[in-house]
Amino acid sequence: MISKEFIDSQKKLIENKIDFLSGELSKNKTYKDLGSTDEDRAKEFEDFEEKTALGKGENQEVANLKRALDRINAGTYGKCKVDGEPIEVGRLKAFPEAEYCASHAKTNK
Ligand SMILES: [Zn+2]
View (cartoon, rainbow, N blue to C red):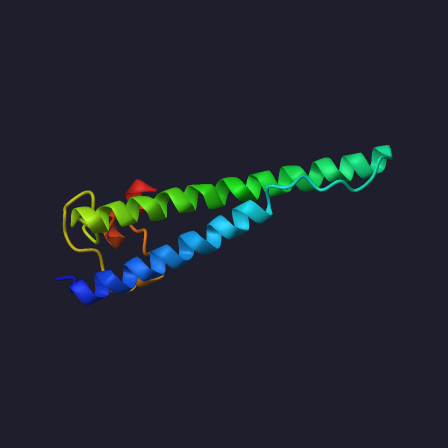
């Protein structure tokens, strides 16, 4: 059984993570102008590609975290999507956005 206190603390953790990731995402949005030679442009493009790829991963995590908040509000947080059993507390501490218990996580990645 997952206590209300635990869910409240998870909610704070999730909100903090969303804030942090959103901040990182906005930092990475700018296309840095390094110069006008071909070499500079190639480097600019490389940096931009790298940041965009990074941003995708963070966007995905923000989406997962927001879905976890939805589940908190719906009262279904911490239940495995496969069998509805409570997800291990240690697992939720490490991955507050976890949707599956440890035994189902492997098959639902
Ligand atoms: Zn399960």
